[in-house]
Length: 305
Image (cartoon, rainbow, N blue to C red; front, side, top):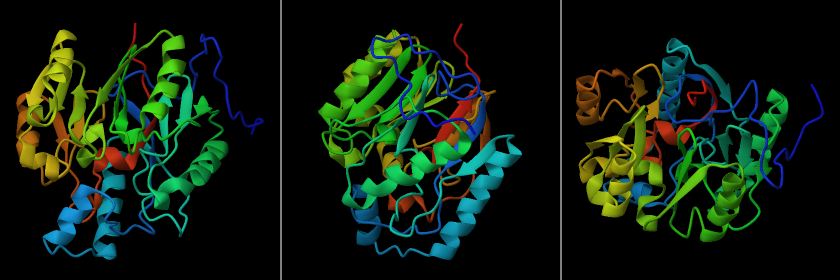
């Protein structure tokens, strides 16, 4: 293994894209993915979804969650995606949501800064994993907080990043924005209420120029921004947001992974010619995250011209 690079970002832009890793869209064919471990997972009442589950009297069963996590990993493998697991740490119950502690860009991963106290240590296992895989870091967020559920490499040349002032703060957003804009990319910021956890519970790319959005949960300005980019929108009812129904992963080649419980979106995806892969993760989602929250793409085929 070569000497590990903690920051390959060029101060004035012009950073070269990685050759073996990286992505330039949310929908390019997924080849390698980083998944959070289920080992120490338990629901924490630090978000609206988990508080709702407790209020409704739902009970967590770790054996069921572990079996569902294994089913999801098998689904990725059957789809031809090579899976990597973040090293489990017994002090980190929300590591399962591997989307949040880093984000992948064309130029390498950005290690983020977590908002919740029980998640702040997640930076250490994620850096160790990138060292193990010999993936050099683009950079590390040092201003405020930024979590991966708010960050989307929407399509070539465009980053969409939500910020609520909590899980992603204006300071963390602005630091990342400054870096990416120097690379010549657009960064679209979207401010929303912390009730919604991350932007990926309201918005998802399903395929090129096709998105799922809960129109009732976002401002008209964001909807119009998508339409101005000629992105077709599948509208998702608000009750499905509460069940993490918009939290899906585009696998590329007209395939999408979504929770088995989300039959409404599955039907709409099939009507648009997409193949649906739907593992049951019903014991995991009440904790506040779905399939998108659990994965961090390490390599997608670049689709930009």
